[in-house]
Picture (tube, rainbow over the protein chains, first blue to last red):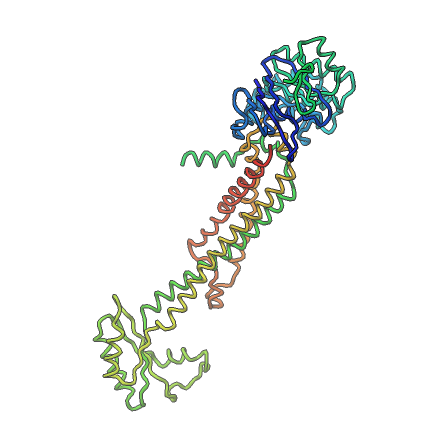
Length: 224
Length: 301
């Protein structure tokens, strides 16, 4: 799905990380941890083509991200659902319209009928479907963002601190949704500081925990 | 052509979903409408000026090029003899269709702007004027002057070239300036609409971020802005054009007041010319907004 080969990223002359090699295989479940400022969000952005590596190769579904044009990046994002900690919506559209936005921009609005209602029910937002995003609580926004991320039935789900702004109960609920998606065959990568979340996930699904530290990506203390 | 028409239809019909995704921004909408309207209003006047000066240049060229004047200054006792001799010379000159002495009334009318209508022309030593109408390629002025010098010593031939050419040149330059003004107006409109589009894009930065995040292609995002600005420019320019045409229509007619300025307007099918302005403004807006939108989007991840 997504491959990193000796990837480095520098910002303003300072190297954030380097020599990162990683493969997100189909159906895998990854956690990405590390101290603040280590580059977790940057690494996730490389996963969906929002940034370009300063060295090495990032391959999105087999294509080198460095050689993809903007249209190709846009099309690859339809296969990658993204959930941010500060999930952004179109505030003038209803929750339903926001969740359906990926279908809208890809000209597949007709697929929203039926599927959309089921999805809104799955994330528990039936009562908020007609509301505007600013009227939602933090947890409701995260669930709406998750629903938007999966409505296109993407191959990969990238979540950046998805539980950062919600209470424990809501974080467990979001994790359950992500595990369900993984069981459906989706590749999941979650950046988080929350070790309890990782422990809970490990008890339910096979996960791989990656750590970004000292400019290197490691697994179980071994540099990747 | 079919493809172009289909694209034009798509542009007008638009994508309601894409339009809904981009919220309208009141300030830029008003700015675009006002700019397009006022520029179209000015363009109507520039076009009217250009067409009027064009007509003037054509008229001066055509009328003055086909006529000339012979002036005979002779003592009173020789005036009739010199007039007859001049007519004889002119009637036998190839390229001269007709030669006609101006009557006393016609000469009085020519002098009336300077001396008033009651000038006792018969009592004054005023030269006799002969109007010469040319045919075909016209006469040979050098040859005619030589014959007149020999046979009518008091005759001076004025073929109008001396003052016709600068007048026609001036009218042609005015016409060119009118078209230049239209080009400048189109450029200014494009610049203003570009600024308005960039303001709208900046105001909708979050909308663009979200749409990119969910896989929207640049052309899809730009399309919502382009269609909106194109239609606004078309609407504003249509209003401005109609107001401009109405203002031109209100100008006094040539028959009432006479003179060049009152002829500043459209005649006959030339009234259709201003109808080109709204689609032109829409085309300018389309190109300007598309370039601004795609340029801005390229700067975003």
